[in-house]
Image 1 (spheres, rainbow, N blue to C red):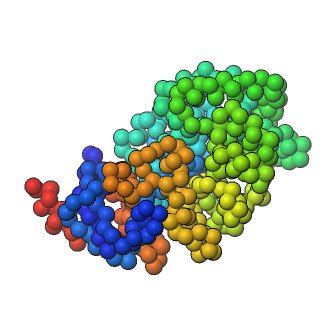
Image 2 (image 1 turned 60 degrees about the horizontal axis):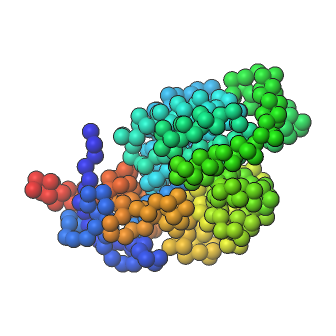
Image 3 (image 1 turned 180 degrees about the horizontal axis):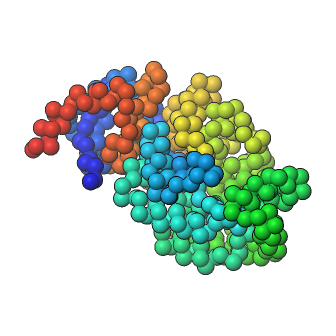
Length: 394
């Protein structure tokens, strides 16, 4: 059963409009932000902010496999991830799915399963769920298959990354970690090492492969970038072939090069909330303070998105409108989604409603439909039920 579009006017709240918090009302109807007299819900004491747009999240992996040895069907995992995103104010979410030689849940076969699972689940989704493909650079024999899959499933966002260096390092310094990696991929250590060596042999073909993909992405209208750039030279190389998004640079030099050539830099919100990278890379807050980070993403934890925005406010780095733009307006512009990211009339009705005192997300509206409702906001909405019923009867 399709959820109805409520027609409501929210009053009394502090609303983010035109780059500042304003005391005004906001109306939604037919899935859009609108104007006009509608049944009112008093949201005094709340903040109404644009819905969060998450450009990279892999928390869905934990919903599909809460333990490595206990996987669930992709559709079950997608349902859990969908609700997790909605409960944390996310209205558009890119699920970061690998396309890699690494095997298992990072293999091209599994990526195709996820594409089909998301297509099957999409009509029931609360959140606008999309797949981001993380394409390993040393997968040169999959070009035709990847481009066909992107065309067939409407994938609009790809990032390149290279885990081969990590595999080579583990092979030398921590063979036990490489063996665990092999186990996750369903391989013996010997089989996994053979795959690593086969990938290493592709090195000379990789530049031409990436250029071919870049040309295909341009034809298909796909936005693309790179992940974990270690230095400015790597970022410059990707930028030159059109991979303009710099996702999770691991050094200040990579972020600075991206900024110098106008490439948007994305960092993880958990990095901001926790005060640094869990893997020992550069601190996201340092890049933000230096003006070298444009947007924040959930990475592995949806609650970090709004927590990071308030952290930046509390530490005096940014105002709330500036911090919130890093998880709403700016991501919308980066992925060329002009219908969302701001609370302007005519745009998609994507709203995150936060209790101003507790900072708890109590209501999420995605595409005009209520996808999460809790706390006092639920009681206030219930209070206008008679007016909604009367409107429906008309």
